Image (cartoon, rainbow, N blue to C red; front, top):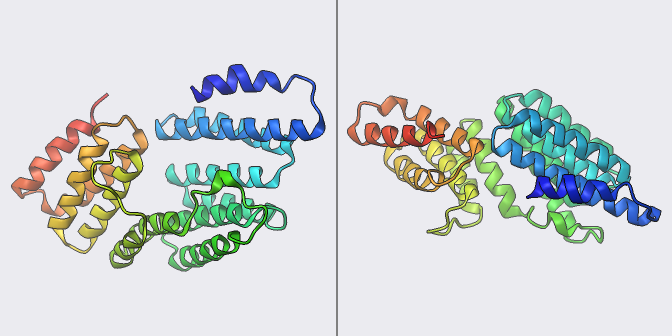
Length: 271
């Protein structure tokens, strides 16, 4: 639906006549549509299509002359690059997003760039870089509370959201105690909620438990993740589940683990 709206409704409007201020808003809104379409492609594992949508979003953001929109798009591109397994390149992209917009964009937008940079540092195994970027992101979220330009479209980036990402960063750094501590500071995962975000968070918690050699709580969190992610069609979500099943390797001889791996494999190999 987003792609259809982008292609058949929004883009044709750009050929019309409008004032400069209306045009800036129109280009910015269309850039966000293209960014959302790109992130959908990322979620489905369609990386080539995602890249095309990201490039389109970046061009539209540039046409809007809004540094906040451009920084947001480029930071999201950094997340895509990091998820594809290129953390060093993602660090450069996120840092570039921050540097280009640091004098003009609202604090919360800059916090998103720093959070993307922290995620990439974590995957690269750079603990000092990840910690520094994470602290900076938290400071910027604090500053956003009194920033008159604070954008409503980024209101979801709160300290609880940062804590959610921090849990994953410390899992990537193989520091499970810190990962679980940050997870407890994140938003509560309500029982019975079958969303992709909740399923992914369960896999992060589960893997952190395994890093501590605590199988039982790890397997329990893994069961929650499997229940949720088994109902979704999301390549990105399955990559998190696959990472957890890989971490179960030392316990493969146990009957309960073999049973879990069998059920997880049915999900991972489903069309």
